[in-house]
Image (cartoon, rainbow, N blue to C red; front, side, top):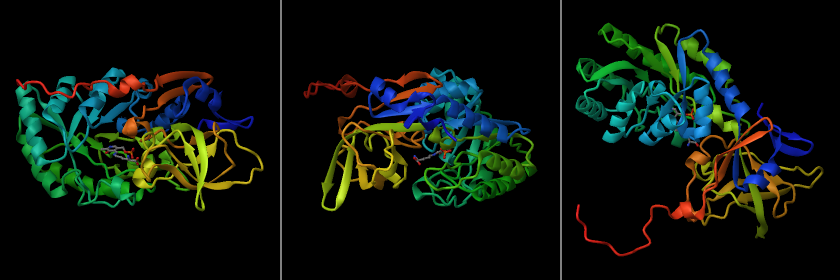
Length: 423
Ligand code: LLP
């Protein structure tokens, strides 16, 4: 269930017809449903009821401040991967003490920012990073709360670009290395061992890989306990998939029950880092048809959204449902590729889609665009990035205004002549 439904023959976001939003804010336009966002967060939170836990929204999926604020007001924690993301969380009123800082390449200034802000934990991904965190913490006269992100070498059975827990991925440390690094960390007065973390990949549509990864990591937790190192929290990462087309991912309740069962013997706090499952189906991308054309035997619908707005089809061959905002009954469908204006052959939103005959000005709705949509958008071809709107009931908020041409050149120098270099 989501809040983008047909009413009186027109797709609505909650109670507002999408054409009215498109008219007010222009296209391409990301539209998010606050009710869906809240419901998704609450369902996931409830799925771990009875367990001491914290849902830490992975903001890389969609880092719009209004969305972060929506989750912060529900008591959410946040999973971040850069100083920029920490800045966003703080701007949105999120609490640093509920922030998990993941990521394989933290810079010194980012580590310092996180320690000064007082994040809950830094998930460390290598021996070299552990040493850097220790140095920066000492320099600041602080004790850095750390967890190691282990790589449980489990196949999440997803797209290779978003599988992260395989033995040969760049993420995490192996179980063997983890044992050694925890021992080092426990002896370092600048470090405080808080927990253990894992994240095996994204868009995972069965519970098996999660529970297997947890099982393997619990063995490490047991071994550490044997050495007197207590693991206070267990972060199971994110990765729960959603339905884009005909996938049948487990319901959050099923996922939560599986996590609970797998962690039954663990007596600390459980952290989750969901991204996609919270925001993916809470957002759509509304785009306008510019032209239709035919080349050879192929039909094209050229729209005003592009890979710069939603790169997932180009990048992963991902499928997003595309439907007319005002469906035409009994129309004989035309099979066409829905493509954007960018000068790349990979600039498509959908291939071989059966759509009613379309005219310039018609609106299309690209589904499941709330996660890794705007967040992965770019200015390639010097295109302004889309506006983002949040809808609740019959109310709308412009959560990010459309970029202007001035935004596009901000920070650039129009002078081509270098000056004397004095630094
Ligand atoms: N935690 C960590 C450490 C992560 O790296 C990620 C995602 C998450 C949590 C959230 O995962 P989720 O629940 O959203 O699956 N751009 C790709 C997805 C990349 C995911 C990267 N890491 C896509 O559009 O499919």
